[in-house]
Amino acid sequence: MATYKASDIKVLDEITHVRTNPGMYIGETSNPSHLIEEALDNALDECLPGHASIVAVTVDTKKFIYSVIDDGRGIPISNDVPITISTKLFSGAKFKGSKTAYSICSGKHGVGLITVNALSTEYDVEIYRQGEHATFSFRNQKLKNTLREPHTDKCPFSTKISFRPDKEIFETLLADIDQVRKRLYVASVELPKCTFVLKVDKKKEIIKTTLNKFFKSHCISDSDSEISKSVDVSVNAKPEEMKIRFCYSLTGPIMPRIVSSVNLLPVEGGGTHVNIFTDVIKTYMLAKAKRAGIKILPQDCLCGLRAYINASLLTPEFGGQTKDKLINRKTDLSKLEAGLTKQVSDYFNKHTEELEVLLNHFDLYRKKINSKRIKTNDNSKRSATKFTKLRECQSSEGSLFIVEGDSAAGGLILCRDPKKHAIFPLRGKIPSVATAKEITKNKEIGELIQSLGTGIEPNFDIDKLKYKEIVCAADADADGGHIACLLIIALSVLVPDVVKNGHLFLAHTPLYAINEGKTFIPIWDQKELDKARKKKRKILRVKGLGELNPWQLKVSMIDEETRRWQQIEYSDDIDKIMKLFVDVDSKRKLLGEDDGK
Image 1 (cartoon, one colour):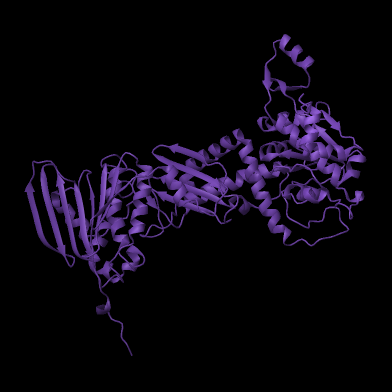
Image 2: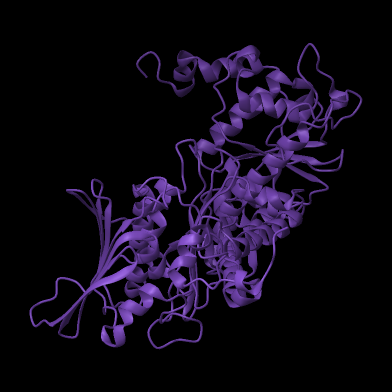
């Protein structure tokens, strides 16, 4: 039987402990990429406060020798500091509470360079500092040579860390160059005044990028063919800071794609800073959706999210030495969270049309998910047989607004009464009318007819009409008038009884309005306009529905006392009207252009 005695207890020295438990210090050991990053941490930490402006990483793929060089202050040479930080765990100048050398930095555990030395067969530290040149050479983790001499010429760099990984530790000695390159690109985004160089054998690459280029290459994919407008928010709670750029893919994969960094360190596992951002987005979007009568779930607000998040923190806490996840408590970042909440709210409160694009996107996603669970019920006026972009209302006596584009739809959604007002945005061009068969080939018209619930001949049933009023709301310009005409004719052809029974209306859009502070009064004719000008009222020129904010839309389109709706009467000459729209000769006759006139 095995014995357990005091002599069985062993105390390992630092180097031996790292070599015995490499995964504890650098994570996986398939390749030595993490060793490069440990040395790179120190170089970038010199860049953050502005002490260094050049960082270079060199790779020799034949000898498997890696170097990281910077032109910062240089590691202190006195008291054998380079030897201490290369052989002793928990040594360094970046611990919490140590503010003399570093404020914002990524390396705070004091186990960086010792892991590089412990897991390499060759390790050298070369320093130029304050008129002195020093080299400390280690072989198989033991100090073999030290050189210290005065130096009065121009220094080629300040600190150079070179090493050859140990093949007994790593499955391959070739590092993941793409991982290192990405790290340098992140640094280039956040430190545009610095120069970053990656030299692999004889090929030298200057790493230079912008936030725009980085965001497109790392956050957006080819499958994201339609994206929302990018939003930039920045919160500064000196000396800490959080900068975020985000948008939504409206057509690509629904899974969020979030790239984040903390103190220039890519944090693949996300963590507290990412959770704070997504919580802010979900809280804000859910509140706006509820106000607009949209039923979505919190996670729907992340559907298609694309984001880059950079945080600069005084005391980042990571999940282990591999630093793949930020684990600070949310309260540690409370000032940043409060600022971020205000920034997001302020932005979307000013850009309501962008907000509505996103709310519609979330709503469509939720309806698509729910539609898979709903069976068709022919006895119900509101049976869901297909997923469409319709924003439904609750009342069977409600009004359906047909509007041009997401901007107008977004504003109406914010000001409507969800119980009484349904919204259907037209996103494509209505076809010129020729025959009923050709009209129904158009996707927009097909979904609109489905939204009405009546069907078309020979299965048309007026009793299944879901709304008391169908309201066409288009801009007051020529394009808007053309769209309104095409839409009215299409409905007259496909569902004539809807028009004959007085359910179709045209909502007039004011070309001008009195706009003074909280006073908004639509101007509907020249007489009213002249009167307002005579009284020197402040007059707004209304270019289109998308130019009006939600409460102005409510005054112009919804409020019974101020809106201008015109009931559409069915014409027995519908065939002649259709011919006018598609026949060039008929148009010329109408305009007096035939017979040389």
